[in-house]
View 1: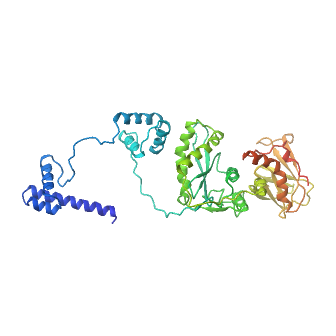
View 2 (view 1 turned 120 degrees about the vertical axis):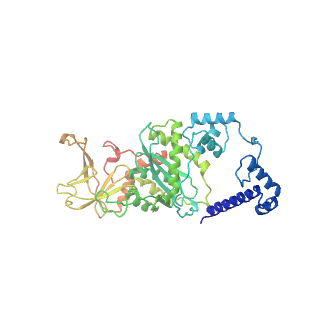
View 3 (view 1 turned 90 degrees about the horizontal axis):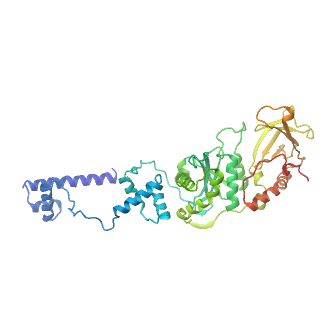
Length: 452
């Protein structure tokens, strides 16, 4: 039996005892002294209970003191209470009591406790008292000791703009040691590209974390065959391995409860923040996320157990090759006509690379849009992209042919060539910290052939 039930049973027993003893005293079966001895009370207290029970109809056995009906010395006036309720119903009707008290102090200079406002709203029937259901207990996991030792990452698809714009996904990174929001970004969906840009922005700002803690979304875990490829790891996990970042998968939402609870908080607070600033698009939302993050961390951030920061800065080589590290790879067989199909595009092997028909080719689709074809030995292959200008079948005159030739080199040249290829583009990226990488166009200079 639980302690609460034992206490209730004890109180019930005591109440029944008092009721029986007072009844015997009123019926003159026992004396006042005997009643006081059995109830462990003074004789005068027994007389008061008996008089109240007989004259005023107070339940037998009640020991409640009869106090005069006077107001508490620290109570708020009814006028002040009405003014507060009017402000809340006018401006913060759908705010929870905790957030409403913060807004009252910030914008109206009214300081109230959360519980006082909650009780006022319940008594005015503006809020319903919520009884929490008993939840299944989960063993607590100790926080990591240092900042950057473990970062929880997740995405939350929600109507962040409340109908003023399209629904989108908010990507979230929270530090396990401090509960601080490390990075926020609005994206169209949870995709490889979105998470790649998101992590690049994080690493350019903070450095590389020791480990990422995520769910089993298809970006992080192989849940089925992707593109008919029997892959042992996802493209994102391969990129993490190349950067030396450990990927940890959670087997339940409760396991990464810190970021799950943060998502629920953001769906309440961030939505109101966007409403106050009339945000209606992803670009406008991303522009305001930094100020919201700083304000939230100032209130909710906890000090770490160990002040050491375990983030590792990106090396110059890693910075120059981020687009190549976060790439999609796939293997295809060259058809009899020398064509390879990948993501609704046709790649034609040029005559400068004979003898490749029927062989296996690896396609590397980099984050900035560049596509590299290579053999299993690492040697590059010359090709041209045949791309239809319309989604429907087009005639020969409507086809656009992009010349994109790469000479044969050994595998050691692969990464170095790509770094030369992207040096100018990523120099601008590092200077401006702008992680939005536009897709390539046929007229852009980086589509010219490599020169060695």
